[in-house]
Image (cartoon, rainbow, N blue to C red; front, side):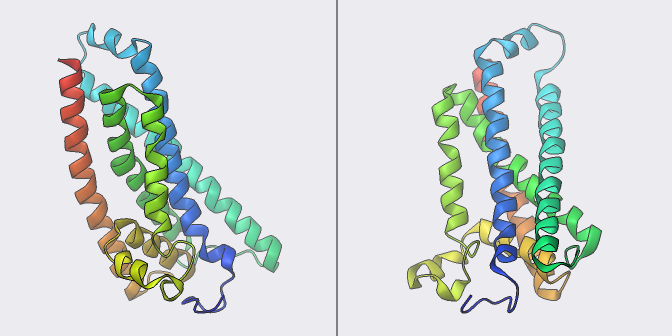
Length: 219
């Protein structure tokens, strides 16, 4: 691939981080769609009739989805490793090893549940529309597409090259790709730091939106 900043790495390894991130996004949207079923069937009305607080139950739901999504991500990474073995004949873990695998899963799942999940759950409580919930995925897909997920920055149009550095998903892609292909190098650690910062800030924002939306909907 001309201009590939990762040298001799095959293209399927270059785009693996994008597949991981999109899996996290898609899994979170689907989880929220399942939550919408609970809303429309009156499940949450039944919970409100019990002495238990609704907030811990929603948090427990998020933790359950985080675990489920983490398992999905481990499966995707395992498949990519096995595919690499089939193509190259060599069984290799990511450059950062097992710790790198765990870091990738935590980053991707945190983005999926903390950012995407919170936003979609708020939308589910607000609209109670499955179409509105499912419409979120294309928006995040475009955000990932407008990054170096599929091609190096040098191959992007000039206007998109300028926008890439302001795209939060770009730093998540860089962090996952760096862990996967290079290990915990200085540049990878920088990308991880920025990705973690973006996830924390966006999670705080979407959690606030989610909390206010749920509070209004159950009052």
